[in-house]
Image (cartoon, rainbow, N blue to C red; front, top):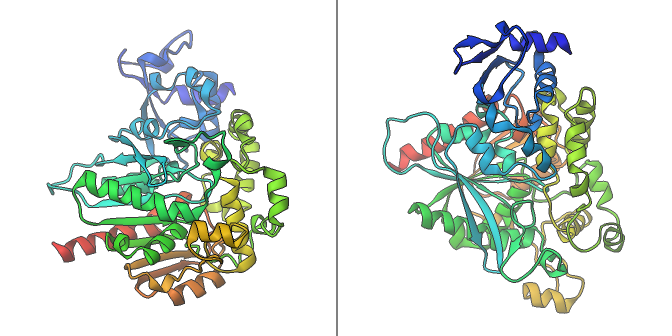
Length: 459
């Protein structure tokens, strides 16, 4: 431990005192007066940084380091221990964005059925561009049990949200109803069963139109780019195939780890979904799915920041979507855990259970003809037809993805009528699309290229 501290102290500059902290005879360190400047892959290593900053009462989950040796600078005084007292709640997304030096705006968007969604915006990047005028707009939508932090969890040069902002795009990050940041309603409380009576059906029918129309009104644009990941793609397939007027507002749809059906999914999680509805309700109730994890979050985040245990945490997270551990910064396990299990409804899990059992992309089955007629105007759940979607679509899939299984992808590709690009990355699993170390050059750059190509063609 002492050697780690000594190694790191040699790499700290105290700019306000204009001297090297390592020369301080008594070894004292005043966080409020200094800024870190360190290389994570030097002899101290990421683990040394963890231990040192834990010793100095900083927040482990906010540390901006990586294993690639990127130089990092951040104001230490913003990371005082007092924030750690609230670490059972994930760090507000606007704080994460601003902490990385990016401008941020936050909005509350009401839906037609009364939910109030939190949406974050990164209006521009750190790079000053020569081009003036409105920036092209892109909306990023996370997957099941995730939140908008999925796009900004890594360093700026490894997080799609920041990369797009620096490439000249106006970036909007959506949060689905029921997750940590979207648990408000005009008339309902989260303590009421009615609040949690939703699934990805409502997310597609109400959340997406509300957010997209709000963005267009706010920016004055006529169309946006849409990037969905996992369940975020499911929402896109449903919304854009059933609401042509909404589809016309999408310039291009980028589907990452796309999921329309899960008939061939190999994830252990999908085996659990084969349980009868009554058993799932008996285990988890009728409100928020796994709400009990709220009370354990602080402890789990702390554990996942420790040596060896962080590897266990990472493997548990990867268990649902497949393993490609060489492509993840495993030392950031506590950062990922802080925003994983961000919340959804038990009904949404039941909808996925129905999808596993039926092998089809269908509306939620409310359990009786009367309720199905009331909710969907048909006695039986409607089957969504992806082939009715005309939005230009680009897809990226993974050969080791246990959720977006290659066989389900093959069927999906045959139904997408306006596919403009598809790339399969053989070794990628489910989380590589948002957290993979090689994602920037294997996928993010291609997304930007397609967008800029489109911008050139319409200018």
